[in-house]
Amino acid sequence: MGLNHRTESWLLHENALSSATMADSALDSLWVVLCAALVFFMHAGFALVECGLCRRKNAVMVLLKNVGVISLSSLVFFALGFGLMFGESAGIFGLHLLGLSGFLPAPDATLSAVPANLPLYVFLFFQLVFAATAATIVSGAVAERVRVVPFFVFTAVAAAVIYPIAGHWVWGGGFLDRLGFHDFAGSTVVHAAGGAMAIAGVKLIGPRLGRYAQDGTPRPMPAHNMPLAALGVLILWLGWFGFNGGSTLAANPAAIAPVILVTNLSASAGFMSALAYARWRSGSLDLSLALNGALAGLVGITAGADVIGPSAAILVGTICGALVVEGVLLLDRLQLDDPVGAIPVHLLAGIFGTLAVGLFANTSEVRGVFFGGDLTVLATQALGVALVCCFAGMTSSLTWLTLKATLGVRVAASHEIEGLDQAECGAHAYEDPLHTTPHVAAATA
Image 1 (cartoon, rainbow, N blue to C red):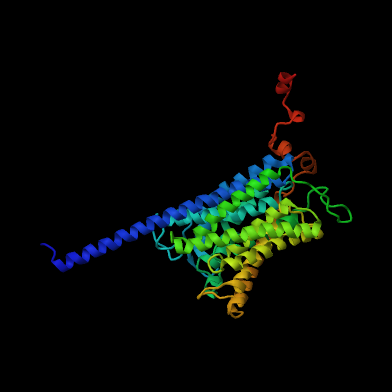
Image 2: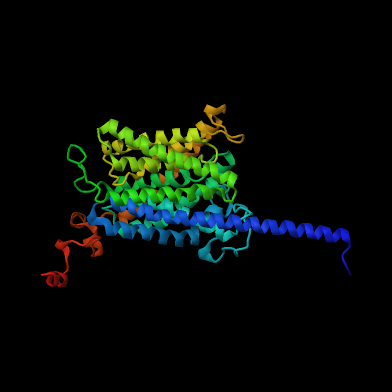
């Protein structure tokens, strides 16, 4: 029986809508996958920054840890973390959807926490590389003296449990989301939480041998390769366009363009601010502090990249650049040894960036104090970042204490003095005549 004209027209209209929807979904998916690849590439930046700012005798171990973090985080977040973060909400954490138990849905399944325009596995991959980013923050802070096996155990706990539960509160339909807490791409969920995990490890493991004199005066342990560190920051800067831009979760130029613009402006202001502030504080143009200032500007704008305008973004980056310099000086006064400045960059700038939403947001949905809003948004932001940092810090401290009591967390003093590359890895990052193998030495002679 043939279709009447009215029914035929209706079906043609529905098919056209379906085709348009499928095309939009494909474009959205392509954008998010591309951004996820950029976020993955950020791990090359993290590896280069940490390697360059540490001493050459530990370069191989630094690289081993960084590649290990992305590998291990991918496995455990798939197996457990994604379910805790984006499973149907119990308020505190998500339920079911555990890949380890075989309950991960088919790639065409729909979940309330997953945008309808994205296939499940596209969304999962994007969130997976975010989880690895949070876990790798700890690596730089505890570099040059942490044992690799306990560090990997901690990484597994962080990526499978600590980060996903905190993330569920904000992005998985948890209680902070319902309170109206705003963290667009992770100033709190990724960076402040990662910084809180890092400070717990630094406090428990202790400083590197010889880092502080008996009277507490810090002794310099210079970076061994500033070109690597600078290249790493530029890679991170590039990757951040995917980190923030991809958090739109749709290929919408009107939404993406301002996010990427304010991200770049805040980073630029952070670099210049830290450079000028360091010159004022110490009398020298400190490249390492300026590089961390750029990263702090990126961290600071991440929470409000979708609601903060360009001029305010420059102000956020400027404040974050000065904040990171003061943070480095504060850590030295407290004898908290952070070789790469991860704690000031991620914890301090992450906290300020979260609060900046309550100060500088300027949209019809979210309005900060300086743009006609009341204190409600600022109070919600303060509550959210405080709860996440306390949770991440306390659970991390408990994990580090358990590892210290069971496996031990610090390398032997002789290994630390010799360098972890030779003592732990049996290799060196660079050719060195002092460490040339016998057959090479003979051939050279």
